[in-house]
Length: 151
Image 1 (spheres, helix red, strand yellow):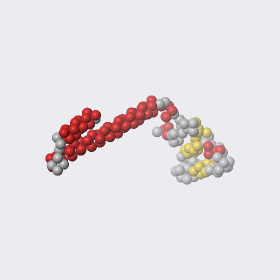
Image 2: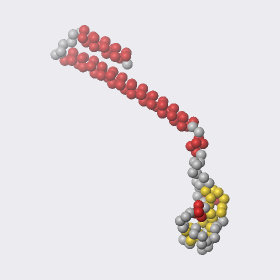
Image 3: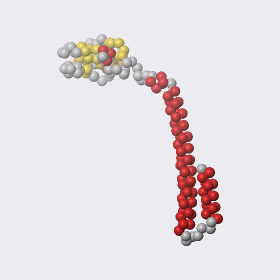
Image 4: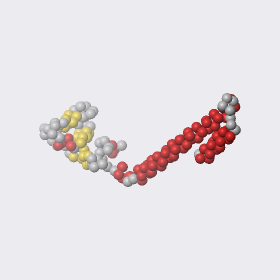
């Protein structure tokens, strides 16, 4: 940019040395062209500064992104402390004989909860002590729905 600025200063010096007349149309055009060129150089310098700022920002962004990519993948993809194994209870519906699964936590819930068969709407378990405790099943991942292991 400094080369362009020097060349424009040279043109301005030449124009002054020619003693361009104020009223002459050709002289006005020459002065205006030199002025416009000077404005272009100013704008180019502003754009160059903006591009340099964007390049710095992009480099910082890339570094942060690389740090993110190189980070401990287990940290991002491991189970969170709340993602524990969920135990399910299986109960056979006395009416349609479907197997209904529900979380074991329902057994200990203080509120009365009725588990109904989604097929026939028959109540298959109530946690109020009026029904015998169903058989407990093995643990399953909290991410999968009951019965997904058969798919």
